Length: 263
Ligand SMILES: Cc1cc2nc3c(=O)[nH]c(=O)nc-3n(C[C@H](O)[C@H](O)[C@H](O)COP(=O)(O)OP(=O)(O)OC[C@H]3O[C@@H](n4cnc5c(N)ncnc54)[C@H](O)[C@@H]3O)c2cc1C
Image (cartoon, rainbow, N blue to C red; front, side, top):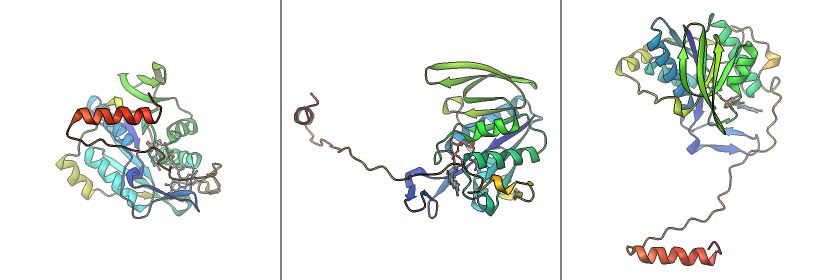
């Protein structure tokens, strides 16, 4: 089976800031990590490969040169190879443009059976790219997958999480799956994996290599407009009762709650 895993390098959200002028995320001088949800997708790809040992896992990331580090991390977990999709004209792409570029990159890899995504990226937070790619490739998808019940060379039966419960779906391959946290526990990189990741040659494909239609990427190809972006202001007041005497803490808490008319 040919398994593709799409991983995004994201800024560590605990350090994230917005530029109110450009209405974009400030990515400079912020530590970058592999989007945490994508690690569940990588782990699931590795588990599928354990069932179908002839499988090949290819990780794909669209991003600047530094996003290569995210791909090396995924190789250290066990992915067979990785491709970085990078071109100046891809900057400022919204989810539609990103989905278009990724789908063209996936087509370029040749045959694909399962394409795995995280449920969403922790910086963009839209959860649109997986479904976007499925729709552009015109293949079925199961989003928010929490359990794979059955998998054969022809089909997958998987359980997905809904707001109100669970739903079991069967789709034919090739298909897209987007993965949530309940699906598995991502493994740590092995020493062998780390050594492979260090040496691995990661090809970089640009717009020309992918024969990308430039009018469909970057600002030009992005119909989404960010109207406003800001860091939320903390309006809640924190209060810690620190007395050694727990009764005193409880009394203070009760009187504060009364003062605020909560009780
Ligand atoms: C006007 C505008 C300008 C923007 N400019 C930039 C910019 O300059 N640089 C920038 O980085 N972002 C930019 N963005 C954000 C960009 O749209 C999103 O980060 C990106 O399209 C993915 O959407 P998301 O983060 O919501 O991913 P989601 O849809 O939440 O991601 C779901 C899954 O898709 C996969 N995925 C998502 N993105 C990638 C990727 N790049 N490579 C591989 N897999 C991926 C991952 O598996 C991820 O878990 C811009 C957005 C807008 C609206």
